[in-house]
Image 1 (spheres, rainbow, N blue to C red):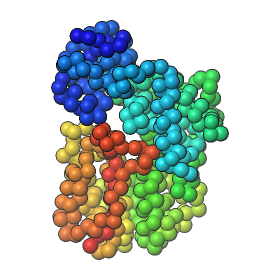
Image 2 (cartoon, rainbow, N blue to C red):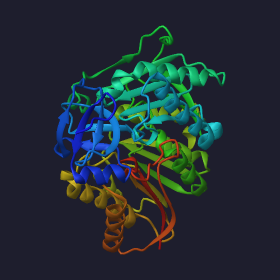
Image 3 (cartoon, rainbow, N blue to C red):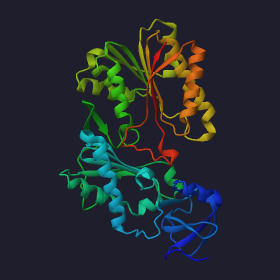
Length: 408
């Protein structure tokens, strides 16, 4: 078989060929029929069809179920430093365009959606927080980090430090170690603190890049929080799974009469309280540390007086195997909220699990409404913020479903 350029060639199944031609960048281990030529683990290989047609070039990982992550389908591409610099520039320019004035606090790189597989980079003012889940990307991360700092410097924005949150068990599937800490290099320093302040939607937050969930803050709900604030004026709001209080604070800033924020984590509740004080909103807020699954039935037995409930739970499933259990969990909290709300009340509800796809989520909501004896008037159907772009040929990049309803 004729080999494309000087890379090893991975021959893939017809199923993989259809997927690649359809725009999906992953080749699974079971889809590889043969590999000819020499390659390094984490290096580049060409992907070809059973008939020898070139399909793309990507990083190969010998221990991962996702065996090859395709970088480009251009047979003439040169995968030198300038290739990755261009990818970084495209990603940064995209954020400048879609985020505008919110560019100082956003996701700069969203993995496959930006053509940089397995890489997440979030920006919190002058600190970048990164996660690398691909062996191939891990090999070139220094080039990418340098390009990010250089690209931002061109706009007069100096990055003071890069904090790596490489803690996910997925790294072990790539044969990579798990760790977190400042990236030490001659082109970027190490700030004196792992806590920084951001301003989102006019609200100030302290972000702990070392210990906060994910990379320190959930940036993807930025405009969904703003949508909540626009409905909150004069309402009594219950914010469930508040984490560090972002939805609750947006509701309070939007003029809510009172906001109750609930989370099972005491440290999260403490941070939410601190954020409320930081923004001068404590007088219209209270905080409860308890399990939402225990609280909602109790509130349902009382005349709680809430007329706006927000449900922003963590992902109830991270695999297809637990979809049914996750659906039951989502239905339970939505059913309880729908029962609690008066006619004319408002519900914000979402799922951040890719595996709980939009059709399953809508089916669950309709089932919960039927059991609660209510109807749902749709106000808005929303997704993640545009700094977490959806690549239409890669369903995995669409994960956040967000709905605003009135109960009728």
